[in-house]
Image (cartoon, rainbow, N blue to C red; front, side, top):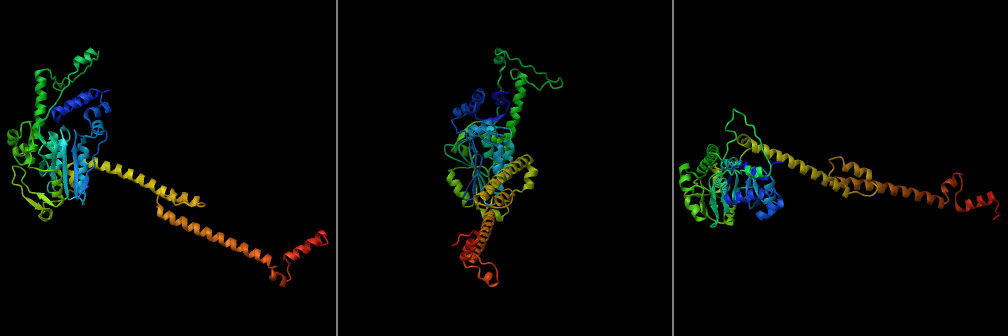
Length: 425
């Protein structure tokens, strides 16, 4: 079985050194969930749902970032690019959402999937206002995502930067040898570079070239997002260093200092950032003006499928699963409601409506009440007939006597008994 630390080592990361070491250290303990939770000091439960307040959708980009939801995201409060993309798309398509606020507090994460999400956010500029607020940390992959927004606002104590990529290779050969583990790999002769040895200069050079290529994609993406050239990012954005608050604004990584509530209130009031994305000079316009100018357009399902087919497929699959779950829950509630409306004596009717798959609880209640009224009417009519017959006997069936029929009065019946049995009385 593959060890957890081997899975960690196989990935390329855009994350702070301290947090990567935390993940590796805990992964070496075989990825035990309780151990990870204790080490990271975070709740075992994590959420990926956007919150909506005053027409502004807030999406949390928090904790280490992974491409898909996995053991780390489930137990450490981390986030996945897959879930973030789902929530971001839902916010774009929701007519009641007028702006999107990314609440960033993350040390970064996997390179795999980060570029796609950042490109998706950048492509959505102009559809709705998008602001990234960094409170705490927006490092590496988290900054990659934040930089894609229309505006980056930071807390005075927030940390931004760490632009670059890292590949950490765990060489376990000596440990494996002590444990008696021998691994044999047969590599095709046509592929001499398929298994480079990081302990050798040539192998290290191959890995270095790979990491450099990933970092270049990161640098160029930030340059596009911030409206500068790649040279400016390399020269002024720290070369992998981290800036705090005002220093991040001064260097060009962020646009201004602010608070979460202030940013949210501004978006709720319809203030939209202008097109300048670096070194200040930002203008503000109303949401109505931006809409009238054609700068804000909703993203369509067709555009999503064309530009982000994998995300569109993932979202569609989740939507189907959600619809099935909601349908099953709705059916259970319907059946429960039908049984709640039941009355004694109508079991067959209740069963037929409970399992026909269509009768609503309200309709069932009306049908059952109608059946109960019919039953009461029938019972009342039967009682009236019985009462009539009893009254006829008590009155001596006068109509029968007038027609020469038998006399069923109590006196006549007693006389017949005396005659039949000779009582003499």
